[in-house]
Length: 289
Image (cartoon, one colour):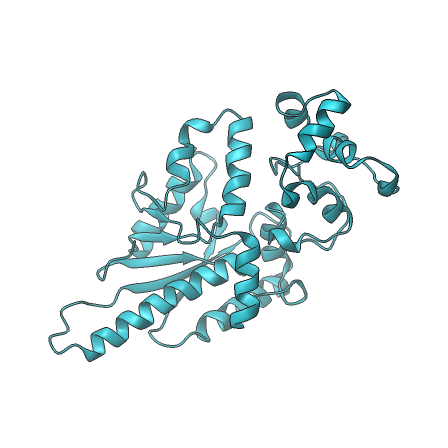
């Protein structure tokens, strides 16, 4: 996954997944450094580690003080790690993305490779997030790329993308953070730039259903016309609630329209999926962080 001569870049957002990914890479580097120091010939070098945080202030109305706070919090997390030292880079989002290019991953890989000299990108995507991506891509007819999307190492790009947490559930990552005392950035300390990224994947939200609500099945953003007000949510059947909180695409292509069939269909879903509408209504999506 990582060789001694590599120079890897960890994409860091501040959530538990990226925090665990950073800790995972740090532990590997620290162990490699100890082996290097104990070796007489010192034939195997220690791979380099960098951390990148995306500055979204150019595309989102983020106050300058919130962006400064974000940089400060991220810098503190990175600097708190023991040696070897990690190089932190704050990259404006318009540097990594351009309107005349079609592929986001290819753009990011090109920027990282050409400007910073890294040959691996580490993402903290866990199986819970990958499952959302699989459902979303399948519904949208983009399943042709799924086999490569969910590999440990996606070598399609100039800079390969590595997913070390691919087999870990979000709940397991949250538990690891608590048991090992790995500090994560909580909403009260995280500026808007990071909270928006977390909300995009239903990672954490303290708000009720709004224009930024997402389909509980495919995780795609809901149109305003698709958002249902469930102020008296307890008086409705769970299957009806789930059906009506899904996007129109999922209702048309995946979910049965007959209420009886839908009830049986609903019973076959895992608990983590069927509980999302009520969690969203209560502003509690911590299990999906």
